[in-house]
Image (tube, rainbow, N blue to C red; front, side, top):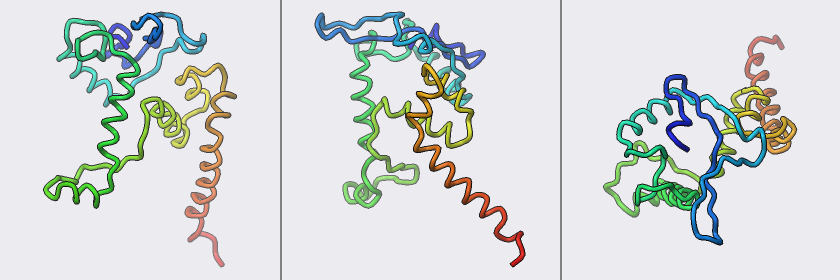
Length: 180
């Protein structure tokens, strides 16, 4: 991701490039070739992320890449993923185990997380959008899927949860309004 792909004024991110790891030649390749035509897309960013990106950009080095390696060069996607997984693993312990390791640790803002990969954030993102009622077409376009069928096939389990949730919601709404 490059700063030129992010419009902080409008809160839009344009997906038009990717970084590939050429294992044969042991180098990173920055390319404008994406997997499918729908992979090229523009998505809206939440205000909270725009604010964080503005802060990050204010401290950015003189480069167009948003995320850099330790050497201030284009970041290897594999390294980014491994670093993310390592950071999340710090938050896997239960509160009890965490306090056993360090009784003086502050746990007020501690979130116990399941192990999650960087790519799984994509699924979490889609799941949260669907579960909170976002239009499936919007979610599909945001993910760069070829069709809503691909999105529906991938996230059918969420739809079933939503159906159960709907029944519970209706039950809660009417439980005290229908006379015996």
